[in-house]
Image (cartoon, rainbow, N blue to C red; front, top):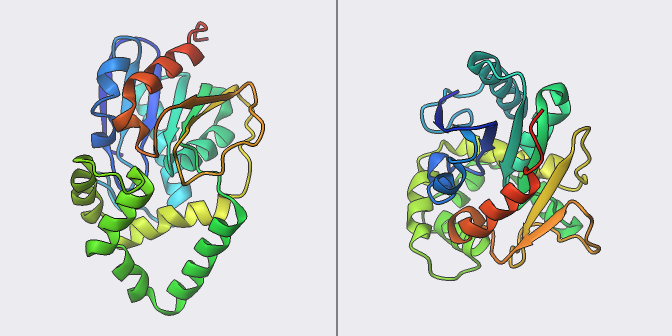
Length: 245
């Protein structure tokens, strides 16, 4: 698994979302690096990380644990963004003794209509995979990025995200979205302390109807690491202000 290591302090693993690797942290990393050793990874099949073997979710989780062992961290905090929140959640479930706290930004927890729409889409893709690939290319992909990432609000990062995501193999994008269709309805429930950071204008996840102690909100759409890095960083520091042990 390709990674970058920057900063100083307790280790904090950053797991990116759909198709975007280090670029998603460009605004957030500078705010966090004085406080943490940031471990920024590229998930399997993205950037310089090799294609996964077998299940995408299992391959990702196994690669993260191998990286922890390689870096020699007995314990680290885990931060997952967007679709990476479910990969990070699965990692924490499987390797809880090595996780201090978990934080999920713009977590993927969807309502029933979105879940059924995804399931229907993958049912169609099973018969006509070329159709699914077509939807994830060209102007269709650019539209999805603008809609779900930026709520159709013009943003210079739309083109940047499009360039990055369009380079990712279609099967990797599909496998990442399949994680949402498999786990998106299941509430987050972990064996370690965890927190959720929601964008108040994010149209992808189903917002909690009743705020819980682990829920935090920032003024942002789904592109929170890019458009609201100050708020996100302040919230992370607030959550992780207790000593790491």
